[in-house]
Length: 336
Image (tube, rainbow, N blue to C red):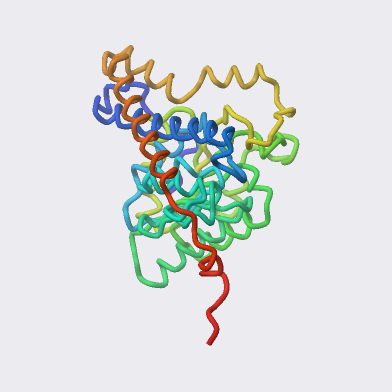
């Protein structure tokens, strides 16, 4: 059984119910406010190193994460803040990690690109393009060998990773070994500064996955309900069949690739056109039109998110630096 290449979903928001829809809004607003504050703090040099924001792509995590169970594993890229947050990693631990503080989820050693939390089965945060795919395949294989049936490993990556050998090796082995990996390709059209059509002759990425005998599907990644429906079908199929599936989500990042990106490769008018399809305001507009939400509801959600962000910043500011004598911990084996 293959998830249809064009997965059907309803445009009738009333089918989902008010509380469900407001929860999806809350998820996306939490991600957006967290990342906007991170950008501000980066400008203030409170956050250092690299910072890659997911602004504009919030519907991906908000649509996929609700279907994952506690025993499932999650592997992401360096643009992973929203995935970690909705997986259950506290905003305090995320912000402290951004600051490089010991209270961070990776003890301040990983920073923005290497969020990790064993308690929630969140296995990163990976700075290497395509580096998470073999890790996800290995985690799923470990579940298979240990007899942990019913588990799913969700692996998020950008379309740029499809050009990497790790993509082809991982999908080939996942199909050959029949392991339960949901490969989620967040296709935002640009691998750093290179348009997909300039780097790959075949831009229908589902065909690449299908060539390995992997079930595929693709969907509008800017529509949170479309993502939710597609992810539900995909996760259910992987959990039931214990076989891999490739889901391509068409999305777009509104900000630069990273804080050092001059954005000379795309037209400002293109970005503005895509912003008209932003996942938060288009969804809230639909809810308001259906009488399921008003501006007061949105303002309440926004205040709640901003308060959470403010508290996380205070937590990070009050955090501690790792002592010098601990810097070799987990790096060099103790002398015997």
